[in-house]
Image (cartoon, rainbow, N blue to C red; front, side):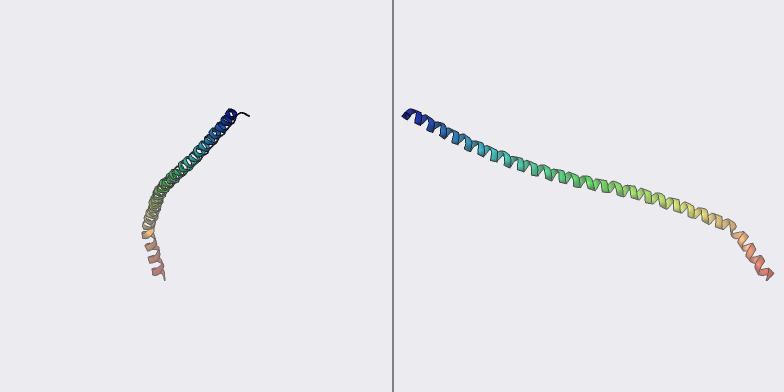
Length: 104
């Protein structure tokens, strides 16, 4: 093999090694960038999920408060109706009791 051929082969090998090193460096950089971007996205998603969870909890609490108020109103209405019925029968009960006391 001539000296010129050996120099060409050596030069090609050197260029190949340099390209390989550059490719490895680029691959490492891309991997690091992807890792960093993935972690940032994960933090963002977790933060968004936490905010969404808090919003859902607030909505559930609001619905529960509305239902509790509705139940309270219904119970108050039923209580008022029972009281009115009892008051309407109070005179009859008093007459009955008075009649029973007088008979004995």
